[in-house]
Image (cartoon, rainbow over all chains, first blue to last red; front, side):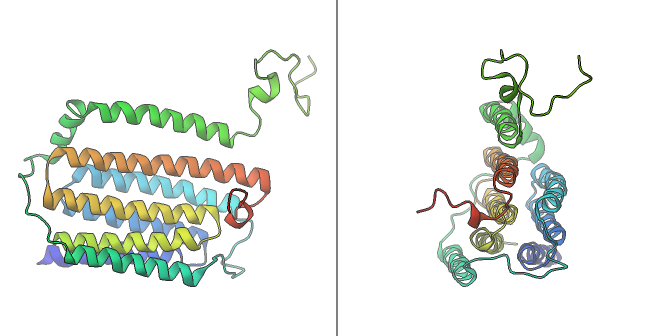
Length: 187
Length: 100
């Protein structure tokens, strides 16, 4: 009973903090509201006995939101907390789509006759996950790793202003390098 | 704590995120909406795993969802940086070259 109440309370925190992201004025507050929502979902996963995934969600999202707060400060030229302004378009249509989606999903959740549980959870969920990842499901880890590397490369390529290919040409053979502002100490 | 409860909460989180992803003008806020949507998916997947088929396979799928979220964040920040440099803007309404 107490677990039920705690679960619903944390769920309410997750939803309300998520709604606060788009309600508060300050970008920093929006970021922290999103972090609260993620932490609440992480705790809910702990209720569902997924210790590893829950803790990973909490740790990762706290770090991600810290980075996001920095981006917000970098890219938001003004501070909406000091200068209130509307940063939304198609507000009513978006609201209608969101409410319609929730009604559709909720109807599905309540109307579907969910099947009974198949199998029992392993005694130690976390070590079972580790053994699955290092054994029969290793392909998943093997695929995620190159995807992460590709993400790093693509992120740097997109975000870097001038790279060595701009300076030295596509075959890296242009000499001297094409620098808009010659630097160094005049060698 | 039933499957219905978990799925209803996750549906609410997903819908809030959908509203943000459609309505927000700032690119980083749109990303926040997408993050919230994936947040709901994580919770729903966790609930379905626990209540319907508690085998380790489902948890591996959860890890894949979390990895997808990380990739989305990293690429989104890179695109936001590029957009800011090229257009001096952070608004979706100023990057509609491919629309229509």
